[in-house]
Every structure is written in C-alpha cells, then in structure tokens.
Image (cartoon, rainbow, N blue to C red):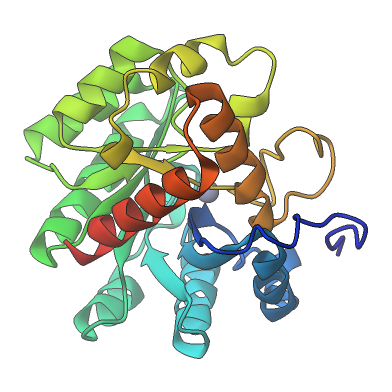
Length: 267
Ligand SMILES: [Zn+2]
C-alpha cells in the first residue's frame, strides 16, 4: 500500500480548516486493512472526514464497519450498476433499519460505458434502490457514465431531489440539469486532467453551496500523482485546484464544501 510521500507537507500555518471527502473507498479490499492509517494520514492534508461508499455486499459491509469504528467515517450502502446481477437487498435493508447507521444510499446509477445490453436491468435495480432511499429518507450517491439522459429521467420519474452526482465530469448543460433536480455535484481529481475543459466550464456555473469534492480512491488520481495510488487525502489537491481556478481562498472553499457535505447527509 503506497502511503503519502513523507516529503509532502502543507505549510505549517495551513492547518486551520477541514476538508470533507464525499466519496472514497477506504472499504476497497486493497485499502481496508490500512484504513485507519489512511484516515490518520488524511490529517496531513486537512482531510478529516470521509463518506465511505458501498458498491456490492462486501463493500457495503466494510463501509458500515468503518463507520461503526471511526466517528469521522460516514457510510453509504448500495449496489453499483456493475454489480446489478448480484443485487440483493436483505442485508442492505437491515443496515438501513438501524437508526443513525447509514448516511446515504450509493453508489447507485447507470453505466453504459462498456455495454448497453443490460440497460433495462441496470435501470430496474437503480429504480428499486431509489425507492428504498426515499422510503428511508436518505440522500443518494449517483454513479452515471455515458447515461446522462436516462439517469436524469429516472431521478425525475422517482421524484428524487436529494443527492449528489459523484465524479461529475460533464459540461455546463448537464451540470445545470442536475442542479435543477436539486442535486449537488461532486468533483474528483478528473478536474486536474488536461482534457477536462468541459468540466472546468461547468465549475463556473456550479453555485458554491452545491459543490463537493471527492477522491473515488483508489481510482481517478489527481495531478501531480496520476498513474499512482489515489490516497483519500488527495481530495486536498482537487480542492486546491478548484480554489485556484475559481480564485477563491482555499480555506473559505474548504469550509463551504464541508458545510455542503454535512447538509447533504443531515438533510
Ligand atoms: Zn466510487
């Protein structure tokens, strides 16, 4: 497990704010056994709080366990579209029944990137989980890839107005449509990539109080670490990039994003 390079440090006078990472996978099998070290290391970059996101049975179990063991970890349970064929909701409903255990339903959604043959099955499982989220009055964490129209339509059909588009990476038109639906947009390390011009255009129209940041570790590593393991603490580099791009003080933006994340999960 690669840890943070010991030479990497924030300036000493730079520790007076906190960053909330709205989507990470400390529950990934490669991260889980080091999760508490990774959480501790987050503090080096002021990343203090984490939403650990489910994706299938194992991911859900480990997300719940982390949230029970560490008060800075919040958990989401749900079935990623990639795992629709394994979907079963008994254990998920058990978790949801327990008061104050689960903060969100996710990540759920549609992914047409590799195949559209299973489109209808994906839609069916997505819809069923949206109904569950509604029943338990929880926000949703949405994974959508090459499926913008269907995702939006299904959210509309199910009257879902509370949630986040995870790793939002599209242009202003799509940003506006999700914002109109009441959704927050969570920006990952993708914003630091050269080819993310559309996304940078979107940044200009996302209101400050609808913006979140995330790592989606171990994937989507931001510049300057591309190609390496993505550490949940690297949410700092994404936030720093956004603050510089929008010409907002980092500390101020961090505070806003922190409040937004709290508002999303607390209602
Ligand atoms: Zn994810």
